[in-house]
Image 1: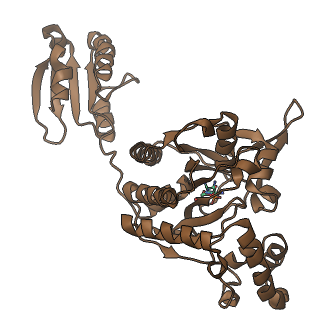
Image 2 (image 1 turned 120 degrees about the vertical axis):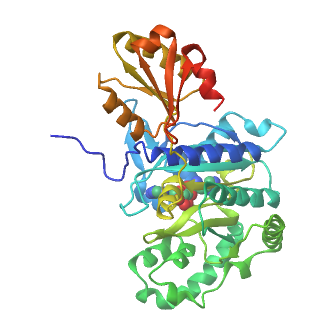
Length: 416
Ligand code: HAM
């Protein structure tokens, strides 16, 4: 019996992987410009970290974690998201002792046992950033701007930014009461999900797609913000406008993780079935202390790479991988065959993308292979040329052919 991949996982094959490489390269490049530095944390952590960090009443902790007991009898969980691990590392390595704000980024796999659908996987990948150690709203705006810039620079069109303030825990507790008073009379008419959310996390009820129409007159959390929250939110909006980042305010926006305070935001785009959120994040001022560290604030985001790539394909964004190799070296004859092994190595080590035949094929089949790879040049080496220390070089686009010295092939190709 042949094996198949597990449900909710993907093989990323050549042809598509180039999109991934491009997106990852863009992410790294943008982080370099914004002065975020990479952090690599383990893919599994103690289960309790996520229970405490992500929150006991979230869907993630309640039903989506890949949790197992290891051989040392520890409860281990494959990371369902990146923030908790980064914060654990920030505390464990005492990064808070450094004089500057810790601006960190990561790219890697996350695991959630979710129902499969377009854009929803059990192993998926995030590009995430976390800025720890400052309450300044300019960092909230910078984080939002970084995500926006990422989408823009990878070539994604139609990305909308929605922002909200979810206040402080005290603000939320007061709002929760107001909201429950509004929801109670309609409890029986709401969907099962809403009913259970009313008990666990009423703010998330407003997020429900099924019952949206009933919430038109629901109270807005923005009316419940205290002065500190309002000032913070106002500044974030001002800075975003100053940077020219378009955004809209969505007072219903509540994220699926418990740690957010003040700013919460999402990036949305159409094109992946029922899913429109492609990335999100926010501020989390209580999280570092919650998992045993000092009282340090943080703000960050996580962008789903599968969703980004799917949308790029959907929008048929061009991928610049037309020429897979610079030169295909064709060998004719035994002596030439030996020289080609050396020659191709020389070309590759001098920075040229070079390919050759490994199947003992005739010239015609080798030329076809060069065509498939869209080689810019084919270099043809027969025993005669070899004896003269030369090689025939053909430019594929024009059909133009000339003879160059073997010793100067690398520099010849480089100067073109
Ligand atoms: P999140 O909203 O849970 O936030 O996930 C961020 C993004 O990861 C989503 O918008 C989506 O693009 C992608 N994603 C989530 N689940 C799946 C899935 N099952 N399949 C495919 N893509 C998925 C967080 O994870 C926070 N840690 C973000 C953050 C960082 N907040 C502050 N710092």
